[in-house]
Image 1 (cartoon, rainbow, N blue to C red):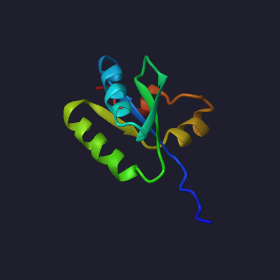
Image 2 (cartoon, rainbow, N blue to C red):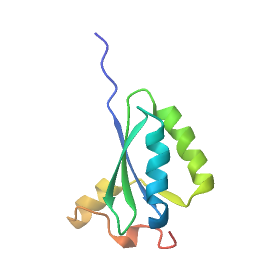
Image 3 (cartoon, helix red, strand yellow):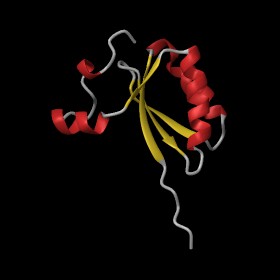
Image 4 (cartoon, one colour):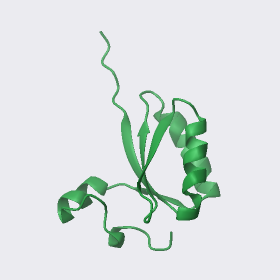
Length: 97
């Protein structure tokens, strides 16, 4: 039996005005990712990338980075542990977004 690759979980910050478009484009690639808005005010989106589709998701996200101002939040787990908060503090994010 082959072990199943786990879903990859990533967090992104997106400008509020672009949230719907960002999610619409990603969800248009059926079976690629599931996008969930974590914090609408901060523009925090959680992506679950389906097993075996990380390379394809990276290509789509790379194209979106050229079109939109998005930022991957690489240490959201560390930030949660450090602050005890469920969401990252604004100080850890790029305020220009």
